[in-house]
Figure (cartoon, rainbow, N blue to C red):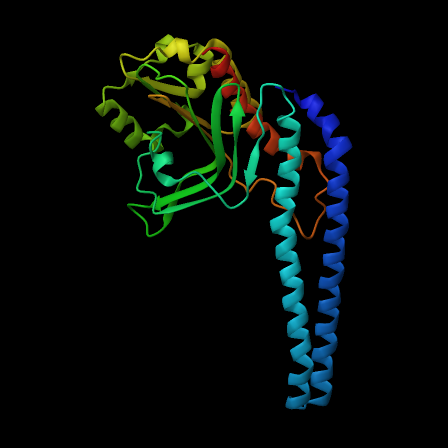
Length: 307
């Protein structure tokens, strides 16, 4: 897959000009907003000076329409910003010879039953939301990914707790993998007891001894006894996952269930959501989204090569 250096060049030549166009639109929205605030101040002053209810209502009516129009424009800017940028990032990625055409749908997401089939999370997930669905093909493997925000009710407090928030990927291998494997972040061990217990219940055991010490420092790995752990989790894949974990600070979940593969990367904030009151002209704004996609697709590439 193309490296970050190549992406930086693409950003300078293709994404940056689009961000400049969107930045001009953002500034026009700010001008409209500040104009509305000025008119509001003037209207309130006039109401106070005249103290006539009918006149005040007549003055407030067009102002209300103006505010509604501005809020609509701002919302439209926010909903169209991300698709513009994401499609450019996908154009860069699918230029690679190993990729088929990548498709993007801002409203669609991976269904709950498929998320739960990963066996990574044991939850009823009463609140399950998603967006930014991306699908495509790497070599012989079809994949789908999206952003998910999954919550469940706390057993001790009257509130919803996070189960998973981040980017989630699913791919269907073209052959059945022997056994089942789940890789969980060591950092979240105390929150994953139900997942570990459920996997133990189907014959899963801790297989960390079969993997590198470096990998075990960050991850817990469980597998059924018939799983080919080192054949699936190659040394290159282990290093790629750990490298990304260290550089990004984000936690990664992986599972291999029959012929299905699931990968999740935590992301506490909404990626590529535009600002209104400050500039969006930033390489870092798009780099993080690109790197999240990059590490997921790199794992799929490794599986495709080793098929």
